[in-house]
Amino acid sequence: MARISVPHECLGIEMRDGTKYNRKREGFVEVTNERHLKEVNRSIARNLHWVGVNGTFFGGDSGPVCLCRRTAWPWEKTCPNCGRTL
Image 1 (cartoon, rainbow, N blue to C red):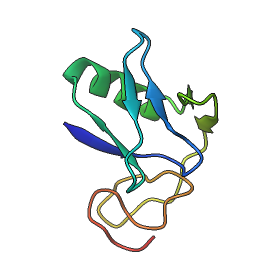
Image 2 (cartoon, one colour):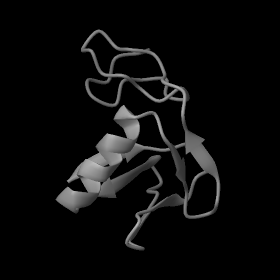
Image 3 (tube, helix red, strand yellow):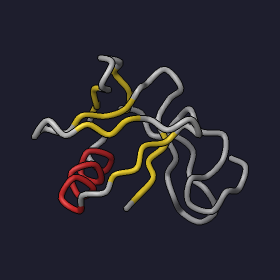
Image 4 (cartoon, one colour):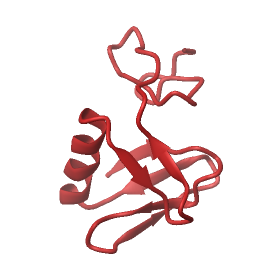
C-alpha cells in the first residue's frame, strides 16, 4: 500500500481499469493494488497528466526535490517521503 498526495480540489484518482481511490481527509489516496501503484509510478516518472475522479486535471510539472532525493508534487509543502519542509 502507498499513500499518494493529491491537491485538495481532487476527490481521488481513477485507474484505467475503472478502480477508484478516493481522497482521504488528510489529502492523500491509498493505492492498495501493486499493479496500480506501478502505473502511478510510471505516470509520475513520465510526467504525465492524471484525471481525478471529479474530472480535475493534475500532475505534469515536477515540484521541488527534497534532500532525501524525492521529487514532490508542485503543490506539496512537505516531503511525502521524509516529512521535511520543502
